[in-house]
Amino acid sequence: MTAYAIPRRRSLPAAVFGMLVLIASESMLFAAFIASYFYLRFHNVHWPPAGVPKPALVVPIVMLGVLVTTSVPMQLASRAVLAGRLAATRAFLAAALFVQAGYFAYEVVDFRDQLHRFDASAGSYGSIYYTLLGADHAHVALGILFDLWLLGKLARGLTRYRAHATQAVTWYWHAVNLITVAVVGTLLSARA
Image (cartoon, rainbow, N blue to C red; front, side):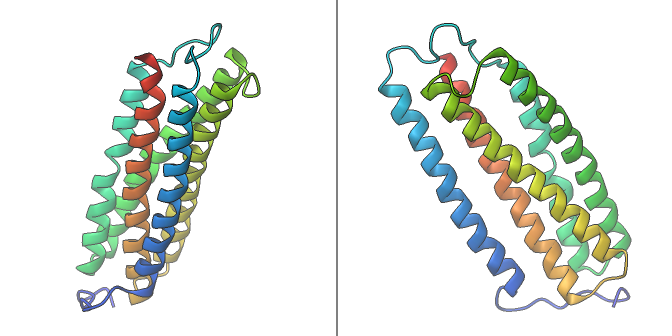
């Protein structure tokens, strides 16, 4: 099937539709987390509380930019798979995975270091801060697992199912990147 392009459908493939339903539910979950954050923020006199450092500004923004750029190779992989270009699809997925894994590795170490600076159970700020950040990191980890699974499937060739899976995983990463923008923006609002 690699010799010709995957024919376009008039309706959404089940994989893409299922992923959009997952994205919608996860978006609502993060909307609830962010609403909780701002509810707690506006009902506390000191935010963050005394003794808790304000979130850093430059590194989170740079790391956010790094993660968001992975939407480009993911989108290119989605287009390449529709054109039946298996090698290009794999290359774009591998490039995105490399950057995403680097982002995740840095963020896990940073998360651990932050836990040493202030405790998650010290109050409402620590609780919602680590909940938002941890949930976002979990979604990045899941995306990395999706990438690995997809690259494993594509190692055996291109099928319509794998093409649809590529599109679905691309949608997932676009959503994770948007959610990460919202989470980082929310957490950095404590600097104001």
